[in-house]
Image 1 (cartoon, rainbow, N blue to C red):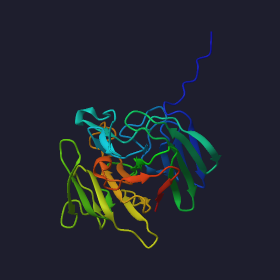
Image 2: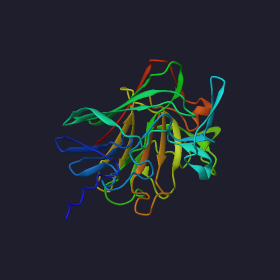
Image 3: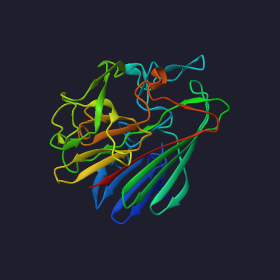
Length: 310
């Protein structure tokens, strides 16, 4: 009788990182991050090794984050059309690399660099070399996304990532959120696309510039005009019931944030982690140009975010 063949995790190879009491796991599928914890306390909400990530959990969003209306855009006088990956809303969502395998080109105890190539295809006839660096250090987790245009023509580009800050035990409602943004991008309720209007968060239910309990509102909103420290970083903080705070920071290559309380996820996941998504461009940037990066042949774009427990 033959020995049963071990079944590999659905996200492929698991790249474990350790530094002191910090532990993180990046994955082959999509180059995402599956977990990050300090002293056993989750900083980013994890998902199980035997599951695929739902709600884009921990996944890099390349070559555009968020939604693209009708999966169509104009570039250099030509119309490009992409598959509708959110068909119920007639959108293409979160790029083209969410399920693409990444290979490790650097493996160290506290650092891994994962690489993949996005090949030209209908709707995005451009070539990108992409690297994702995950590193643990004294200041926590650092994630750098690097893209290089390997084609002969300029291409449209954007990136983001979809981690969920963890409240520790329990749900988000009693957790205190500090969100350093000045402006909310208004969206239509039906397709969750920008209307072209913005509003100041001051005096609204979206004003978390000073820490306060999230409560029960359902958030799935994009924000911009980030408040930054002298180091150029903007910091989102979520304080859990254990009085520990999970922090996510972004550098100035990320001028937009999406905040998502996860209400549309499965009941076991809903409101258990706060989607805190760095984005280089606004939703629908391939059409609006709002934050869209024009990447020339041979040009490289690097954007960095990180997380820690305080």
